[in-house]
Length: 302
Image 1 (cartoon, rainbow, N blue to C red):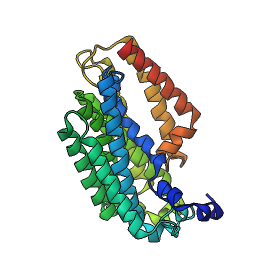
Image 2 (cartoon, helix red, strand yellow; image 1 turned 135 degrees about the horizontal axis):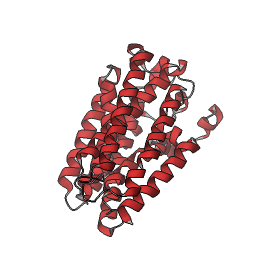
Image 3 (spheres, rainbow, N blue to C red; image 1 turned 45 degrees about the vertical axis):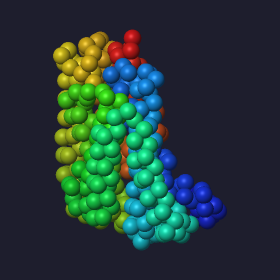
């Protein structure tokens, strides 16, 4: 983004930008559990999935506003983050705080609309608590900050299960947990070689390339192992542990392994600073994702 574009943004556009709608793609994890259970397209399940998605979009956007307020001094020194609405002075502190509170209230209000809101509200509450701790200082504590960020991905996926009443299998929890850790460690590994990131993310000074590479390999190994156990375990095949393993589900191991290798390659090359951007721009990963969706859909729905 160029300075001229940043300055030209109106107040509504600045607020929308600060809510980071591009980050909402992460909330797509909410559909995984109901989709793998073969229930996503049931009207009631689809409605509850959408409600959980909207709730997480609202609450996470409120957190992004608080994070940008706290990081404003560092962001103003960053070559690209300085054009964020708050760092660029396009969104005032009071407006950002009010918008953050409103977004959080909207998120929890939407969660009340699901048939059994108790568990979803608990998941949102845990997400909010961990996120506030992260913004308040955990982001500067090595290893702890990896767990805090990874937990956000896990809680999104788990929210889809509790919002729709799907019983998530143990392998679902393993794959999502370590898959989230894999993405976060890959992001840090890419940032380690970035001069810009090192000027704003203090915790990078506490990591070495060898440590992050080892952590990345460890998490990738657990993801692939967990996914294989999910795909081949006939007693609990499927992310919901409710359907028998089929040939397409077992074959889905292939695109998963190849996608993990592609992501590893991207992290090693320093292209994983923004995992969602890597997925959106890497055509190989996109193709593997499509193949995986087709295979799992055949196994679960056909």
